[in-house]
Length: 331
Image 1 (tube, one colour):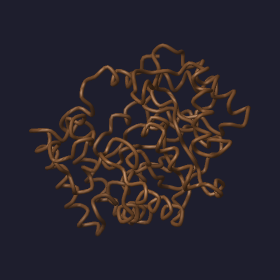
Image 2 (cartoon, helix red, strand yellow):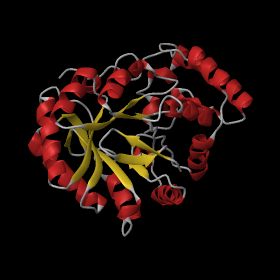
Image 3 (cartoon, helix red, strand yellow):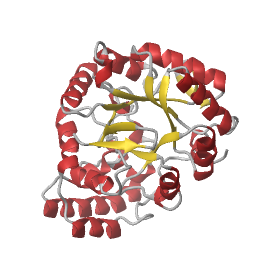
Image 4 (cartoon, one colour):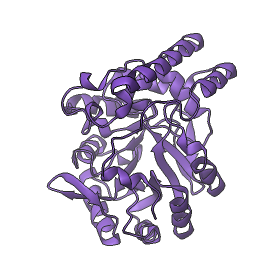
């Protein structure tokens, strides 16, 4: 697979990565045996940029990845995250205190079975810890050889600039897709000014852009989409299905699947963008990776731009909650 560079510090990754969260967290019961097969297949296909975090499980996703990569750590590029306070396996708030960052990194290294992390993200901005302290702590871990590159997740423009002034930020991970384009106004121009790469998570709208959307109540117990995503609930679902059907029409014209078209659109937004679609099935992995070689006519991409303009999607990304306040650019 062709590679792209995230940031100006030298991190080179495949054009598409693999989001591993759903293998252990958020989307119902896990199947480690199937997840191992997906990870093995991803490695074989050159998709070796794996995205995980301590809270996925919690902890189990990092352990899963560590088992798969045992004896071949050099074949993979691992991104993981810190930034939450966990009590008895439950997220109870943010914690990006430097001492906590060091503790989390050591624990993640042990679970992953490695002595370095390629890309370390702050998972969410901590309103109680200056971002300069966070960047400085990660910078110290880079100097110590435990971390190679520094990233942020869901941070706002001011936070990105302040962090970058202390230690170079290589990548920002944020939701970005035809489904959600808010970052185009201020965040994306800021990243390009500073030389920071973008790693879109949920590039397929948590499944909505694949053509297999279901109403919230159709998801099984334990699947976060059942309760946390207003976009698949009630009248929001009906309005958004009309958008999804439009994507399917254009995919037919382009002779690709809806998922491939949605990913191809993202890839054409810039060489500094590396989406990380998640999946627990080999067939979906192979389908998604086909987007890297998809040839889509400019006219179709332009039509998608118009049909999926920012603000077109109906409903907020998340239910209102105390944790969602962490998405705000407050530091």
